[in-house]
Length: 133
Image (cartoon, rainbow, N blue to C red):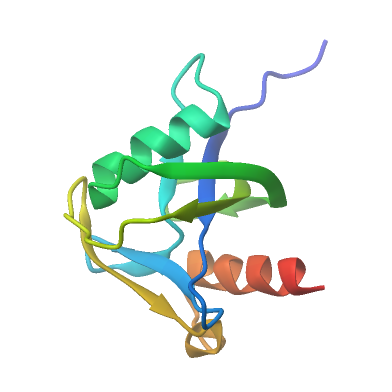
């Protein structure tokens, strides 16, 4: 018999601007991350991203493309495993209305986070590098 594993499955959107900078959101002033969040039971990744980006940024027009990176990490602070799944996405509207714990959003050069010690910011940098290969 196998133990039943529990993973927090998240879908994140990899959105870039014309300069190649990546859209990131700051969650509760703690860290930068890609927009997106946890899948609800029965949701597809695309449905999750559309819901999460509407909640976080007030943007309802998003095009979700294919998965571009996936990783599994342990979040010691919460004592859970997370399945991080990143999808290429595009948005037309850049007038953000913050909600759902988001305090800021901007396009950044990922190099700004290369020295971060926060595990999720490190994961964001790893994702960027994997996509660029």
